[in-house]
Each structure stands twice: as structure tokens, then as C-alpha cells.
Amino acid sequence: MLTYIGIDDTDNLEVGATGETANHLIKLIESKQWGRCQAVTRHQLYLHPDIPYTSHNSSMCFAADMETGCIESLMQGISGFLKQESAPGSDPGFCLAIEEQIRERDSLIDFGYEAKKRVVTKAEAYVLAKKANIHLSEHGGTGLGVIGALAGVGLRMTNNDGRFQGKLKIKEPGTRIKVGEMLSKGLMDSVQSLDGYVLDQDEEVRLGEKLKTVLLGGKRVFLVYQREGIREWETCLNNHLEKY
Image 1 (tube, rainbow, N blue to C red):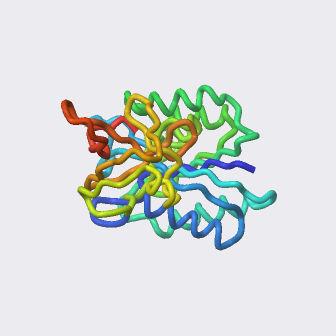
Image 2 (image 1 turned 120 degrees about the vertical axis):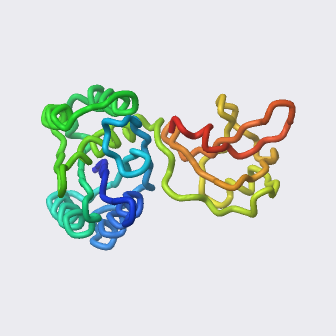
Image 3 (image 1 turned 90 degrees about the horizontal axis):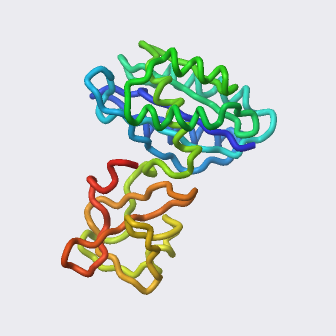
């Protein structure tokens, strides 16, 4: 059964990274044979002085096809891991949502988008989690990570938000490469422009320093753009990816 797992605020400025924690959880789930996991997505939330985030206020989420009867073990395993492995001074939050059991689906997605544009509270998160029949728990510190954990799940469910965690390694920066060769590496489902044009396999892209994919239409998409006056596809820069 399809299950969404969201976590936030497991690190501090000196120790750890929530993306690394999410990947450790994937290893835990698959080593225990509880299920098969999809890749982790990073979801950018609201940046505001009233929000005590560690660095960029982003949460992590991944989906897993879980075996029947493993959910309780999964919840205990993740809770124990977060309690033991989260960085000192962090405020870890954990959200688990089973696709077929979710109520208030639209409200959950709306919460995710709200967390990208305003300050939301723990109280709002817990009220919604209860209505939506979703597990939400805190595992240290103030527990404010529950907000991002819940928002991350809502945003992942849209199939249209989030950067996939980690940088891609294809070829050296400045290299021109055909789209077909990029796709053959199995790291993406398509290469498309910021306005939605899907590149043909024979078209070329000049690789930049930072290679990332985003979640669009439920697919892993590599975004490119053309600088003004230059008819050449280039990999997107940070400012192009900020909204994902």
C-alpha cells in the first residue's frame, strides 16, 4: 500500500542533514523488507524571521509501497531512529500517511501550499492530521518539525512540487550532451523547458555545475532553459528552481 513519509528538522547547523536522515530511513525500510521506496524530494517552505528553521526551511518526503502488516513496525522503527539519531538541539517531526486511508485530501494539499507562503502553527498541523487520519508526531526539542513533515507529505501528494534530493553526476560542467544519452542513464524521465516544452532525444543540452531533477506530473523531470539571445539549451540555475 502506498505510504507517504515526511520528516523535518532532524539537524542543526553543525551536525546532520534531513535529506541524509530520509535516505537512512529508506535503507532501514528496505533492509527490513517492509517495502520498496521511491526517491526523496525536498520541499521548500516559507522563509520568515518568525520561523526558527536550521538553514533553508525545507522538509523531506518520500513514498513507499509498503507490505501489509508492516506499518506498526515501520512507525516504531522510524520513531526510534529519529529519537536516537537526530542532532542535538533539533526539533524533529514525523508524518506518515497511508494513501487509501487519507481523509481531507484537499485540505492536506492546501496545508502544504500554505506552508510555502505564510507562518503556520503546530496546532494547525495537529488539527489537520487528526481530521485527515494521518500519523503526526514529534521526537525531541520543540517538535516544530511536525509542521514541515505534514506540509512535505501534502506537497509530495500533488506530484508537482519538490526537488529530488542529491545532485546528479552525468558529465563535466560545460559538456554538451544529447537528451537521449541523458535519459539512458536512468536518472530522469524527461528533459523539458521551464515553459513545458519536452526536448527531443536528438537535441543537446550544455551541462552546468548543479544538476537537479524536480517532481512534475508525477515524473522525475530535468529542467533546462535558453538564455536570451542564445539558442542553446542549458541546465537551470538555482533561481529557476527556487519555487520547487
